[in-house]
Length: 308
Ligand SMILES: NC(=O)c1ccc[n+]([C@@H]2O[C@H](COP(=O)([O-])OP(=O)(O)OC[C@H]3O[C@@H](n4cnc5c(N)ncnc54)[C@H](O)[C@@H]3O)[C@@H](O)[C@H]2O)c1
Image 1 (cartoon, rainbow, N blue to C red):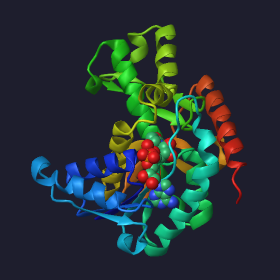
Image 2 (image 1 turned 45 degrees about the vertical axis):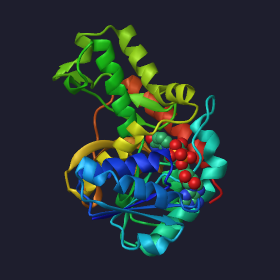
Image 3 (image 1 turned 90 degrees about the horizontal axis):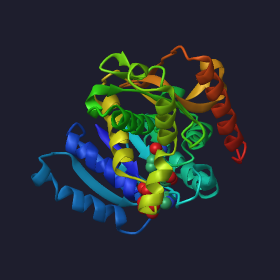
Image 4 (image 1 turned 60 degrees about the vertical axis):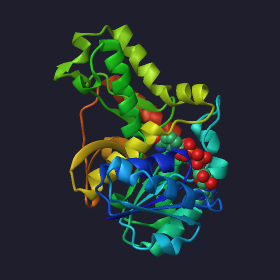
């Protein structure tokens, strides 16, 4: 199992570290455009191997895509992150050019790869990777919902005063402050609906705190977060590499599912060795359906800014 991570910045390095620590991949290649940066991050991470007990071989490359050849999975984290006060959509001008050139170079050297898109605005960047590479739709996956769901569970556990392991919940829709659709009606604490424990008002607060989860951290850190994003990506990579058939909300090209077409947006999918093996249709409340529709309109508006 060979995994390439493009972008040796905060998210890319965190993602490579979690993949290595989970010890399921034989090789991780980190690539960055900044001279020596990926090599440095790879060497630092390799010096954790004896301390953290992993055998994954991590190497770095400055923009030499021949080193990424025949990767089973490629993760795209290259591009600028937001600064406090910015929306993810504002990153499109710079990141679209980066994601376009990176995705073509990856596919040139790994024609059978599965691509996981992380760079923001993520749903639009995932759509751009489809338009650029023409890879089969099950092989292009946008990571946003896995992270947003982890943030939702964090906020639910906080409100319930319960351990996070007791809580389950999912966020679908666009990976943006307004576009996220936290599925409060489906969230549970040890199989009991959370609405049994929390008032509607408190649940709405949980949903609102979840939606601005990234912005809250960006304000505190001065740049966007990396630990949970890296962990979320590593979860998707592991589900594919180990053929786990786990359900995650991921951004995928829709063709009528959820009443939506010709855009990538977060919906529950089964991840296995083939990538997205199934899109899971779940019943939504009327309010969630309306929210999903508005979210899709927001994603399409950002897609319209792409020069395709
Ligand atoms: N989808 C999500 O849930 C999620 C979560 C967090 C961050 N992000 C996004 O991930 C991206 C990376 O964030 P970060 O905090 O790691 O940023 P960062 O600035 O720390 O790292 C980005 C790296 O990309 C590299 N890069 C730029 N252009 C490149 C190119 N053409 N080829 C190879 N490498 C290139 C830069 O040199 C840098 O090292 C941002 O767009 C951010 O918004 C997405």
